Image (cartoon, rainbow, N blue to C red; front, side):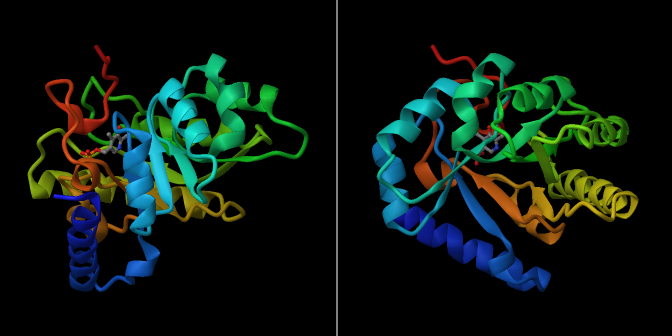
Length: 241
Ligand SMILES: *Cc1c(COP(=O)(O)O)cnc(C)c1O
């Protein structure tokens, strides 16, 4: 199937899930995860109307962003980011989904120009799976408290990856937990605007929509399967050959 055809089908399914959940589809942003796919694939998705793309590796991110500089689009970072890569990436990231430690925020602060603030989400490990990055739910409050002292970070909400091979009920439980954590944070920090819930991927976006996702991160349902790794769709720290 072409990327345009995949997108058209995916958009219909997102619209149907929104309708079933009584949600306004314009409140849900589709972020196309283009990792491992060539810049040309991003061009195709862009031509089909997508404006938000995500990568999970610094090198690949930079290479694609450079090739596609002529396009009007926003880049999201969804992978674990080493502090020594921050400086290069900083000017290009529209939203960092994977903030999970204060050291990363401090690296942003060191490299940011005066007045610059990086929009960021805290990645939460809502399932307790050991292979996953993200802070434990019990650690979120403390991280937010320390992030409040880092001016270069503009905290916008939370992100999570659903359970590996989860049932619908398990997926919903993880996403509901993220929403509950966000709601609690919002009442503790009424001066912050924590509107973003980044959750839902190719296999579990309908459950994420029911639970209030504002940003879906969808890769294979847009670009086709990635050809590496035994569990390529879950977004853990994969190693390219
Ligand atoms: C790869 C990846 C996705 C997209 O995964 P699909 O299952 O292909 O939709 C979403 N989020 C993160 C963090 C990823 O690494």
